[in-house]
Image (cartoon, rainbow over all chains, first blue to last red; front, side, top):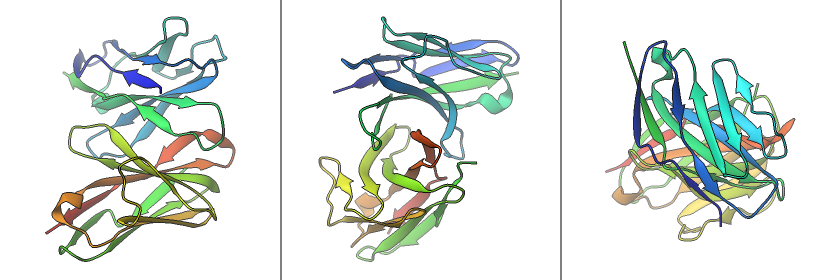
Length: 116
Length: 116
């Protein structure tokens, strides 16, 4: 079974600075998807970014980018120019690519604080 | 695009009553919907996966007679908590996958259930 580990329960970053959230996973598969979701205080889960394992290029979405290291099974999220609205719980998630109804395996989350 | 709604957002009920929660994909057809439960400060726990027109697949430890799931159309899934008890109080979140993006789950805003 796949597992996802987020080793940082809490992180803090100053506004306008850069922060990196860590995520590692364990799998024997070669084809899969990885996601970062954000859960602000409203508790709405919001997709931040996704990465297909077969793509070598790291995904980027505006101020959010990932460092995908397939051999090391690492998938970190970098947030540049942090804003107060980035404060939230961030979950890393893994999805197998075997079948269309595949479920997500979530990490335990990292709570990000953004300070002035 | 990829908007998922949930209704109600908040429900308080008496012990022994049943509660129905609706999950709708507003701008795409969801071939698969997922139901999660989240306890405070914890990650999401998958309860079941449902495909339109077929029976839901429940995760180990989830009582299917307690948590009835119906996925009658490509845009609607319902979760009914039958004979609710205080220990069923939680935050329930649905997600949907389908349309142009089968690999990504898009989440509803969640439903807070409090059983007195």
